[in-house]
Image (cartoon, rainbow, N blue to C red; front, side, top):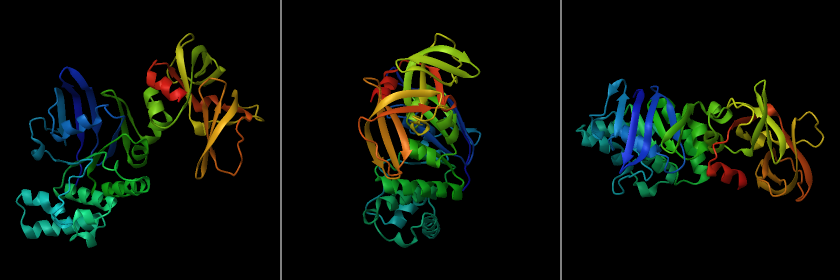
Length: 368
C-alpha cells in the first residue's frame, strides 16, 4: 500500500442556502497523517464526505494523486472511510469482516482470506479471526475496522472520529496504535476529530477548522505554540485571556491596558496603539512570582481552588470579580490554601497579543 496526495481547490458546500464549507484550499502530501480539528458543526465531516465521494460539492475540485476525482462515485475513488460507529457486520467473523471488501470486488476466496490474515497480523489480531465482533473489546473492534478498510488498498484512509466512543485509557492506547499502523502502511490518513489531544499526538500536520473555514494548517508544535488566530489559540489547549486596548507597541511587543493593569506579550497580530486586543498566555507558562522581580507581567490574586490531576495541579486564582487565572504546576506536594494572596506572573515572550475578534466564545471561555 502506498499513500497518495490530496488536493482541495476552492471546495464549497451549501445546504439550502446555508454554507457549511466556505471556499477551501488544502494540500495533503502523500503518506501524511493529517488531522482536521474543530468543534461540532464546523464542517469537518462534510469536508471528509466530499473527499470520499459521499457528497457532491457545490463548487471546487478534488484531486487524489494528481488526478481529478469529482466525476468518480465513492466506490471508484482510491479512498476508504471508517465511520464513528465502525459498521462491522455482527454475524460475520472478524476474518470475514476484513475480507468483505475483497469479496465485493470479486477476489477469490483463497486470495481474500490470505489477505485478511496479513491484515489481522498487521493490527495484532492474528488469534481473533474466528471470533465475532461482539466478542472483542472496543479497541480490538477499532482495529478490525482499520484492517477491513485497508483490505481494499486505499491510497487515502479517512477516519471520522473513530475513537470518540472509547474510554480515556483505551483512546490513548489507540492513538499510538493508529499512528504506528499509518507509518507501517504509508497510506495517507485524514483524521477528523474535535479532540485536540488526538490531533496533537498523532498528526504530521493539523488543519484547525471553524465555522466552515480552515483557519490554520501547520505542524502540531506550530499550531500549539504559534496560533494564527484567536480561535486557534483558545481551541487548541488552554489560555489565560486578558482583554484591553494597546497602549504601546514596540520591538515586537505590545502592551495592553485592561482591568488587570498594563501587561505585555508578543505582538503577533501586528497591532498599533489604540487597537482593541486580547492577550493570551498558556497556564503552564503562568507561575507564582511573589519573590521574582524579574517577571515583567505581575498580577495580584487570591487562590480560589486547586484541582489535582495526578502529576499536575491546576491552581485557579481570581482578582475580585475578574476572570480567573489558571496555573498548571507540577504536583510537588505543596498545599495551596484557599483565599491565600499570591502574585502570579508570566514573561512577555510567553504571551501573544492579537486583535480582539469580539466573539462570545472567547469571552465565555475567559469567564468560565
